Length: 474
Ligand SMILES: Cc1ncc(COP(=O)(O)O)c(C=O)c1O
Image 1: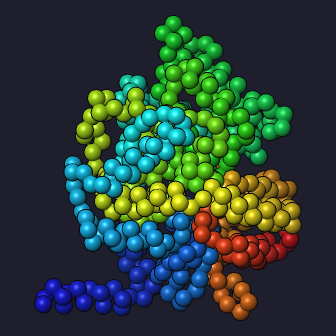
Image 2: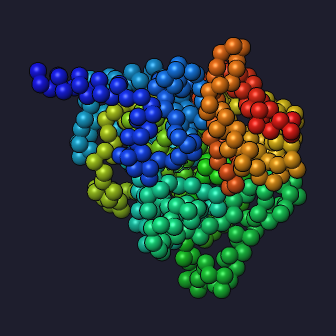
């Protein structure tokens, strides 16, 4: 009786607060460190369905970022929600020292899939959250090689735990936390629109790869002991397509050329698919677009469509046998939790039944054509556009079409979040995500369930935002 009353009271207390009061409470009681405040004040939402978020007024916001690609299969996807609900009613909790069907079947499905894709046997290792899976992959690398130094890309993002921060390019994420002795050596990414070597994609002949190869020419370049035939570096961490870096797509031939060098120098390739995996870039793994086989793949986010968190690492058998990587190597209480594995298994089954390669290629192509049209129409606002599958980018530039325009990008983002765009008499909002080296890129990760009409609508709203925010440049 007492418990019920307390519950009712708590519920009522929660409901009684206005958003202004909640913001005051947030200001006083919530750490800001576990989030990012892109908008001041941050916005509340009450409901999510399909491609839309709804605020307390019932205003619909068409979402083109889908929780940074964690909810790729649509908010409230019924099939995946049901998998979660069924699991809650059968085996909602279980210590990971015991086994349950879904964990084993899920690992088997991913293992077999990679066997068919890459001709390599391997094992799957679970955790929760992308950064934790990155940590686990770092342990695998260190365990195999006995080395702690790795290469990673400028513009790369691998998370914000200490280990993941050490291999993420931004010093901003490390600045307050002391010395990172294992800080990665950051290599320029082939960001052709802003080539770090001022080359042109059509004529460069992958000059950037040659520059990387030169590191190993002599021991005095600091990477290679020619006598021992050994590099000081254990692995190269890559995002096949850079996510936070601005959905930057490398040119044809880049990865095969890079992988050749890594193989020659006995350096592992770790492919971070946390944002681009599960068809975001038109293939199950984004790296499949580039014709190389990584040694380790790290994944998370959309694996559970943003429901109960689950992440994981697939590694080639030789790196992860139970003898090499024994029980307890990275144990975490929630590592292969029953709820997450049940949803992920359902998702894997769904991806077998439904041709997401076709869906993401077709919808992505339709979307990209519209984005290119906008670029043609607004050359003084949009400097570059690109896309692969349903990972799309719009780079906001100044009038010259090249200098990054972060201010305008922020303005468009903030205006989209106001929810006051007039769409045939109805107020709507547009949810965008800002990324890129200069924070001037809209990284679009729409739901795979988005319809062509919704794509049209999103571009109509985007155009309204351009006209509202940069009237002198349209
Ligand atoms: C490529 C990539 N790696 C790692 C992470 C970190 O994942 P999480 O935020 O789940 O720790 C992210 C998150 O955005 C990511 O995009």
